[in-house]
Image (cartoon, rainbow, N blue to C red):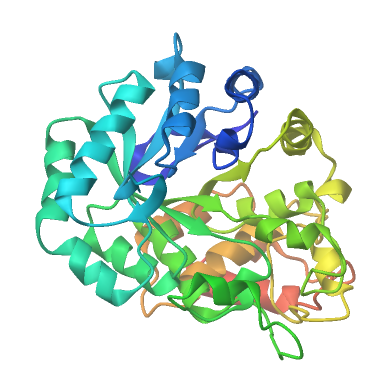
Length: 381
């Protein structure tokens, strides 16, 4: 298992994380064993937005004896009322729900206290003004939550979160289909309406969010990376082709700012498929050929950092150069952090010999040689 730093938290989290939303569907012992098996395979981050007692009890039992080696995203504002999930900012419901989570986790802290599920401006304003955010800050000051995060499906809200300065990471929905859609506060609409649309790559708001997270060291963990399973099915996929788990995991992990993809694991077989990513070949991870060969929605002319351009005769990491160039060129001044990352590369764009062999391998027809020239000019080396 490989690990990445999760933004400002500096937590070293596994690239493959555990999304716990299916835990309550199974016998408790079976779900506890699934989480423990995931931990044995190196998974060390789990998201718990679920308010139901069973899910929380399962996570608590699974972490018993190894709590410090798990990083938990625990959601504040996800409550269980009359046997139903209710999202709320009302402190009379929020506080006991959070305290219940700690009890069931058998813990006195949560690694990342998540401002739970904000997609609309109205909810943002409610959450960020008043008792709710005061409670989150109080928990943080007391060390009951070690870090503050936020979950959203809306890149506009995500960008607002980055700008606060105190939100250290974001749980965000990422997959190739979602990335083509404009910002919305209606999650359900993200799963429909792809028919006969002229999509042409990543939506600008989403690209901007990834850039801001990378620049401001706000880490991203990924939810809904499999589009609810639709991308595994040719008939349901908006691209008209099917992807594999390894391809979709790789897509998420190549977005700027992303540290971990939290896979919703429902069985031992799904766990094995997810962790197999770490030993998968480049061909097995190749999402770009699937998108480029799809009958619908190509990212023509847009670099997706897929790595098909390898190998370079002078060993330039072309995908990384392109990623850093895109992050820097969208701003009036190049951020020092991006410039520093670029200049630390073993080989920079100025070493490009213009052979264009990389372009013959690019699934999206990107003019790589010209981009190397532009990157060398922008960064000065």
